[in-house]
Image 1 (cartoon, one colour):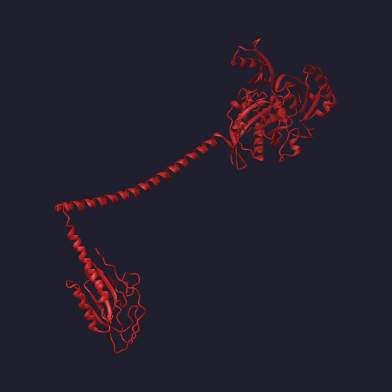
Image 2 (cartoon, rainbow, N blue to C red):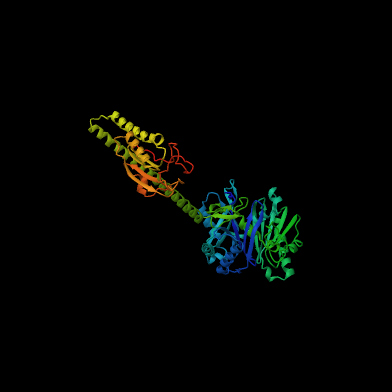
Length: 560
């Protein structure tokens, strides 16, 4: 059965690149609010250039994960990358988008990364103030060369890349999906996220779903010993957290050198503290997962991967480098379920279905045309038959007209009656004029006066007597006694048991060659010729035994 995806939440395959973790591929189900597919592969990330070390390895890892998770390579893909540049800016309301892009470009170029390469950015309004005619925006920037490389990778794979985003904004959506701060979000309380990276930490201040402020502090954690690293983070964070009062603090560690649970015990915060370890210290999953995903795999899921798979959440900001705002501005492909398989409605799929529909319509059209041709041919034959009959009728009419247009009906009727009268007379002879010692075996009459009669008799006198009676019935008839001979064996269906001293004579009285004579056999069961018993009811010869009589099998009179 078909189960079409809604227009609000089309299926997105989330892919996230995280230092020390690698590539994650993840799909979530918004209805059950759980992760239904997850996998990851380690790849190297270059911290100095802030990009993937080997794009070939990245491409191979994505393909392997697609195959492993049975994901259609042509799916919609949303990618998150480690942050390169993320910041806020206040600008006048009156300036246009081009001016905003130029202002962001000038600000981004202050970073050492963009002194060598061109940046591409995405931005969104956080707040506007009509009284001061200012707007507060948040933006994220990446290297254009990195974006182009990634586009090429997914073009080779055949995926529909609908977005590229900083992991920072994606992490906030991941928190929302995990329901860790659901109460604060629902009641529009303030809450903070402390994100620990390998070379820095960042604090995000939110009210409900709205990002209010952000601050990132560089900190080379690897340069410290185990105890010193915790002390350095605690000292630095304790100076900043008072500036962001909140109902909850969520500590997220993506650095293998820092355990969020341990850091929680050292940070002074008056409200509730929650922790998530996305590193080697991860012990339990913080999000619901499908039964197919193991507990070990589930504990490795990062918030940025969750955010990538839920880039259409309208409640949180989406800084999509490929298009300002949510991924809805990209070309998203709908999906539907058929026989428990997810079908992606890509342009190729639509074209394929269109071709199938076209050929189906074409085939049906040919069938209809063929059927119409058959019906037309039948109608043409019927029409031709009608024309032939009409032509014949017209010819007959013309013949009658040539004869004066008068038809002698009386003459025609008299001819028919005469023929019928003569035929009936011959038939009457079968019942009343047959001598006692004569039996008829065959009778044929055509046109009333064309007669062929065959039979047997024990006396020649009876044969002559019967012949004379037929002549009396039709004196104008040309019937003759064509055959008269002696027979000794059984004849047709009659077995005559008589003395040898008595003879049986076979005769034929006719004025036409009968069908029986033409066929050359007297016992052909498929012909219309039939044998007749003694239909006159005369006595059989003394001492003779005759087979039980059967109904007369006479030829019909042909009135034509």
